[in-house]
Image (cartoon, rainbow, N blue to C red):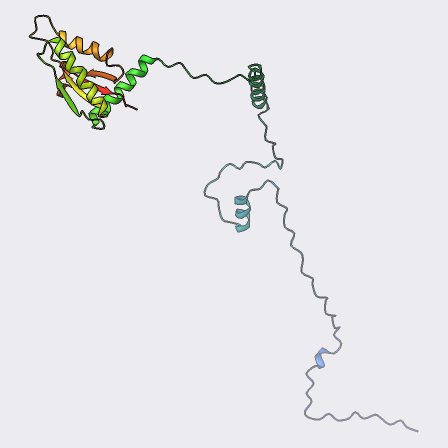
Length: 227
């Protein structure tokens, strides 16, 4: 019995197989997704300053000027206490307290002695300044120029007593300079002596008058305040 030949089926005129050439090719498995690599940044030294760190971050930017950078040691230096000065001060204070206790409870600060003459001149200068400023004014005048000594002193006593009773602060007594007197300025010396002795209970002080008030030919007499 004869075998029948297999007849291949006739292909149609339109045969479109676009993937025919890909037959037999080995398919590659898709490679696993690559994991992003970690960027290892170089470690920075601890002693780097802020300017250097900024320049490294900007890359190619060049530094226009450099300045010396002090290295940080990381250790803080402890502040030294002035122990020597404090001990010396404490020692001096202790010595002062010891000397103070030796004085006992009767210790007191003594005021410096006052020279009465200096105090008198200071008071006189103060009254004369007040007279020039107008704070103290001359309220009355007595002219003894050309009078005999006894008559002049009598009138002087009455004048000073009356002015003191009325509360006058300053009066003017004119004596003259005694230029034309054969015995010199007798009246001038006699008036000054009376003011120092007989009139000391009423007279606080007296001085030669300012030039505009007669100069050395007159006295400004400051009277005491009567109680």
